[in-house]
Amino acid sequence: MSDSATAGGLDAFIAGLPKAELHVHHVGSASPRIVAELAARHPDSAVPADPAALADYFSFRDFAHFIEVYLSVVDLIRDAEDVRLLTFEVARDMARQNVRYAELTVTPYSSTRRGIPEREFMAAIEDARKAAEAELGVMMRWCFDIPGEAGLASAEETARLAVDLRPDGLVSFGLGGPEIGVPRPQFKPYFDRARAAGLHSVPHAGETTGPETVWDALRELGAERIGHGTSAAADPRLLDHLAEHRIPLEVCPTSNIATRAVATLEEHPIRRMVEAGVLVTVNSDDPPMFGTDLNTEYAVAARLLELDHVGVAGLAKNAVEASFLDAPGKARLAAEIDAYAAAWR
Ligand SMILES: [Zn+2]
Image 1 (spheres, protein in one colour):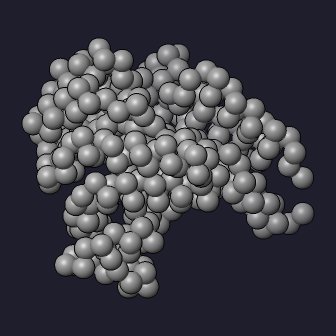
Image 2: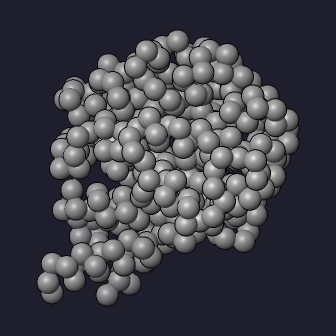
Image 3: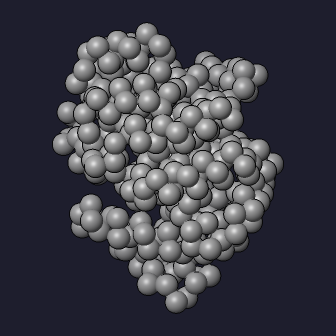
């Protein structure tokens, strides 16, 4: 078989592979198709409702332009029906890629701040979650994250929403946004509160700052999994610690290039992480915004790690192991992956 036929075969394998995704943002998953539907609901928005014009709108000149477009999409989420539509349609895009389970990072603060009543917001995501499971076979769980750039008031609000309103699908508590100028330790009281209520701790750390931020996330925020953790590769002691304590990394290769956290895919440290024995999972972060999807990220990881279909199935099982699914759910999804890989060819 030629190389290209092999690569094509692997792409087909990845496309059909049952997968779990652990690092993907709610609004950041709005594909042009979904944005067009939202824009049609709000004709006064600057965002074009025509899918062809949207493809153009989604081609980013630079990172500042990406933020501008991202915020214009945030501006389309104005009522509970927008939230429900976005959430269910994100699940539809996942189902098309054979994503069976996803922990979606949701930033409720962005919606409650713009006036969507908090109980209506929770009802909308839960409604979409149940419909997605019943109609699309996609199980979704929530990670409520603090938008770090919005300061401690947003942390207080996010912790309150998570602990007091706690929707059934909520499993974890996170922290996103910029890292520079937003030290992790200041969020300790909010993580303490969420953890005391039984939520798992999954902050972003080490995406745009050094390994010390990952140490802070572990020591101060009780991180059980790290969002990105890219710079951990620069600290062998940290890699050993992550490997020894089975603290997984949520690696998002294309996102790291788009945000310039890493200069080129060839320089991505994913291989060093795997060789150090760290449990590495592959994720898409804000897929349409970075021109990617989970299948593409698996193909990228397969190339960087030189994996065949058995290795790729192993990556998918890493995500199951690192997930907050219950034990029977993990066993079922892992068995599905094994059965698919065994039947391949
Ligand atoms: Zn992220």
